[in-house]
Amino acid sequence: MTTQTSIMLEELGVPYDLKLVNIGKGDQFEPSFLKIAPNNRMPAIVDPEGPDGNPISVFESGAILQYLGRKFGRFYPQDERARVEVEEWLFWQVGGLGPMAGQANHFRHYAPEQIEYGITRYTNEVNRLYGVMNRRLEGRDYLAGDYSIADMASYGWVISYANQGQDLNDFLNLKRWFEAVGARPAVERGVELGKAERRSIADDEEAKKILFGQRAR
Ligand SMILES: N[C@@H](CCC(=O)N[C@@H](CS)C(=O)NCC(=O)O)C(=O)O
Image 1 (cartoon, protein in one colour):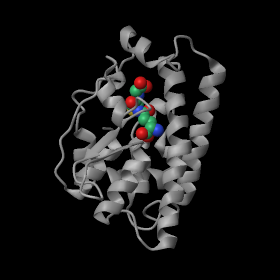
Image 2 (cartoon, helix red, strand yellow; image 1 turned 135 degrees about the vertical axis):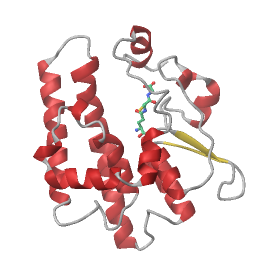
Image 3 (cartoon, protein in one colour; image 1 turned 120 degrees about the vertical axis):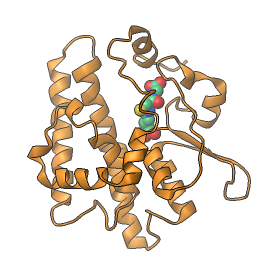
């Protein structure tokens, strides 16, 4: 479970159980988890009432947001033009903002040595992406039409802008969006969920060994 999924579940107001996966201890390699999340990454969900009445599991945050949006018919418009816009910004996050922000955070805070090239490359790229989002939000409240899964997806990353070396005062439209989305009660609840169990692994050498340097096995 990560922030985007918990925000969506809170927005929908549907009942769910939270199962914690301690990735610093290697829970993500448990066969039972790999069965539903073959990429050994959170989040993943199991819906006991899938489309045919049987349980269904979904991994990858973008696919989870789309699945829940379709299932409940909310935050993911059915009109094709509106839906394409939401998908553009959803995939922009999944393929761009998420991976780049993750690398910026890694090189800035977790790499065992300060590698200037990596820090600059990823911090600049996140900066460029924030600029793209800031321009998109000029004169509009949300990334794609009404508040949608596209906003939830990006919010989950912008929330740690400081770790990515960014200053929201350089992106005033983005800052306004960030504050408006963050003020939604469901977003506040989604962000809080599991917060106590999440902690930095900056000083946890065992966790770093498990998380960094993974190869096919
Ligand atoms: N593209 C994936 C990324 C998920 C991801 O990177 N999850 C991290 C935690 S935020 C994880 O589970 N890491 C476990 C590991 O690296 O073994 C998604 O959005 O679902």
